[in-house]
Image (cartoon, rainbow, N blue to C red):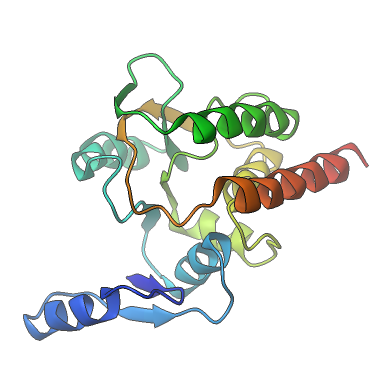
Length: 197
């Protein structure tokens, strides 16, 4: 499933060509801008037993699914990639401004999710029923969507399994460190205030 969130590249054309070759893929539009809005739309559009999302630039190799699927089959309901646990490797590092912004964001995110080392790695998979049950009442449309999603899962008392990934920084990221980083941090601060209330 490909969620088109106002892309300006050739995503829709590429998927249309894939469909002409009988590949089981579909494009779903998303009227609200933002990563969170697009992922939420995908979750709520799926009926799969397991579902998840990953960066389209394959910052985490697709082969990592070979680690994820057995864990989901074994009963874990949330398995997320992490660049911050033992065994993880950074094949290509981020620019310095994104590294510094990431450190600040993690410090704020720890107030909401103290047990999660890396909330923002774009490689997350879930039991489908769980993901659908929490996604419907989520509010964040931007990059802090992941924090809200994981917070809702932990509030249900369910463990989140972090697995180490090999990760490469992609050149085509739509994240703008200053604008998007500030908005994401403000969203997480609001989540922390809600948690404290």
